[in-house]
Image (cartoon, rainbow, N blue to C red; front, side, top):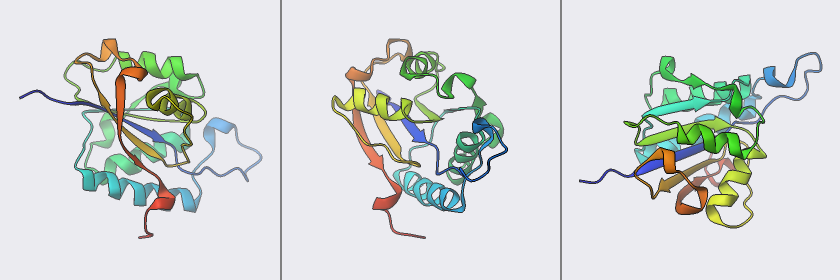
Length: 168
């Protein structure tokens, strides 16, 4: 039976902008961010799609989001990989990272930032897309190899946005 390759794109949850004395990369999630991350990760869990590999930006808000999602879907937190190239580095860096996914990885999850996430989702869908904080986009990959990943040859399977879900 042929395995489906999937990409799960996770834009980090809402970050706290009120703390003036920390660097952008160190900004934590707000309480609303935590709540949205839990709510959306519950929805992902209902889809029964569990990644084989999770790669997160090194920003605190993205890594925290990745940990919340991973915990909810029973993915070992110690296996979350950090990659600084997902921190505000451009869509091409995201594509390069996707292309390096392990050959035994059928489902890859990336936790990152806008505008890169929104641009990647837009290039997959072929039209401008809005991708809110704590949005998740599940994408079906048409290629059998991550090395041949091309956004235009993928299909969006499901988009989960916090505002479209009921509160817990």
